[in-house]
Length: 234
Image 1 (tube, helix red, strand yellow):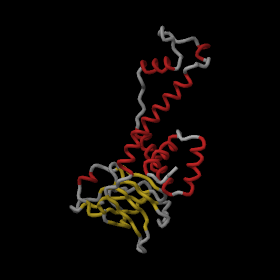
Image 2 (cartoon, rainbow, N blue to C red; image 1 turned 120 degrees about the vertical axis):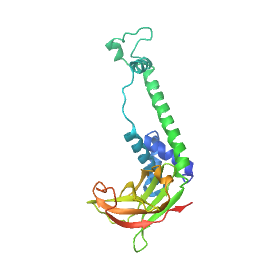
Image 3 (cartoon, helix red, strand yellow; image 1 turned 90 degrees about the horizontal axis):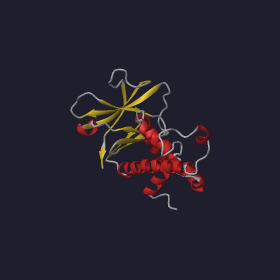
Image 4 (tube, rainbow, N blue to C red; image 1 turned 45 degrees about the vertical axis):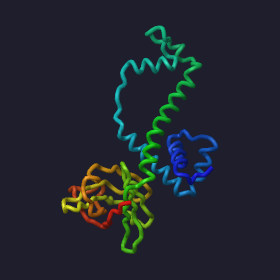
């Protein structure tokens, strides 16, 4: 199987992160992931997307009718009556409950995958512009891929680790107005930051990285700018 194909790699990575890739296929994928940077990058991308999704969803209380349908589908409620099935019956395994539960999970997973795979193929593969931050020795510290909905960022081993500080990414507007924060930069690995609407609304002279106290700039402006770079359109 050719894991270098982008769409196949994306599909396998997304299934791996969701937990739907199982058995020998999962074991082989894990063994390849250890030594293949592209696979590691794809897995980290999907992990970051799922983490964003999980933190952005607000819990809601479903209506009673939804619970009723769930109990009915699992065999916990008598279809001909609104009264619950006796507790001793509820404890007995239902012939249908196992495959119905699995089917429901598969449908949910497929729905999530279809949405995220569409985003991957339209977002992850095709950066709109790129930026590279380097030190005085021209060693790359971060690379930034500007995609449709987010910024995909890679930290390198050349980056000096500052455990008591945070690095923060900024837009420097060409108009000379105040820099706009894009968020905190991780000091290792790959990660994404959401791309705000303002990113496409202002003329950008440069991107900048500042060193800040833990948690980011306390004033809303860069404390000390360390690196700047131009944004290259593709």
